[in-house]
Image 1 (cartoon, one colour):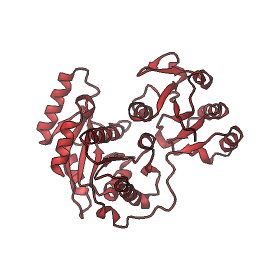
Image 2 (cartoon, rainbow, N blue to C red):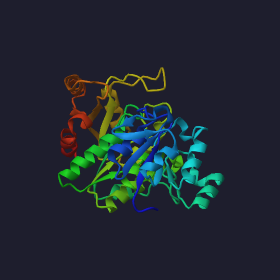
Image 3 (cartoon, rainbow, N blue to C red):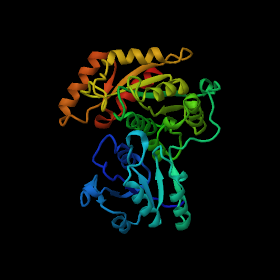
Image 4 (cartoon, helix red, strand yellow):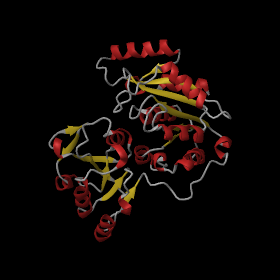
Length: 342
């Protein structure tokens, strides 16, 4: 692996999409490496957060990238057909390629041969480690307080909230560790397990392994990245396994302000937040009954701070729980609520 990482984010066709392009956004906002360019032929010549967008791999080479990172999360985790040629051009240009999709590039015979020829690495962030099994009970013996983000839907900020809480905790000098459970979190932290790629019987065991590892890394406060949603018709299973395997002491419920229906699933309503609080508390493992400490509200759809603050105040009144948007207004208030619950 190259010592200095300069990242070209592959966002072809999705860099504009806050849902499918969430990996790109997470890496740009929180990743440790320099992002030098974004590839999306539909937006060539534009910029995203000051980062130039190019139309072809060859156009990106002048920025001297060392690794091309797949910055999209497609439904089903498969590459669009047009991406095969894009990946091959990256390899031929001497770039390592890193992907978080379910379709593993390190097991693609054509790409493997091409990578060997050009001396580059293919890395799959979502590939689960060998030897996973069911929980052993070690999760309940971890000498740390565990906090998990849960949500009313997918792609509403569960990772972002937990990273913001971790940054605030470490600013205060707390021994906090962000525990990544998805491909973007792994790209940010450099370790973790993408739990949605784990065999369902071993999902809780993978979550247990993650909190044990987080404590081994020095965490006395473990902030675990949530996945999916208990009320999502497609992705509820990963949420339940993560809740029972990470055995949190407290939960942070995340919600996108104004949302009433699961995105992409017409006819599937989001229950009232008071019902979601009760649902998550009732479904917690009986051995450790986690409580919802606060509500993290995503107010990105509100242009004015005054309107966002009014929405936050309304949710706080509705639920009786501390509520805030940690991206817009800082994570301090929510961290105070978490620590008080612990």
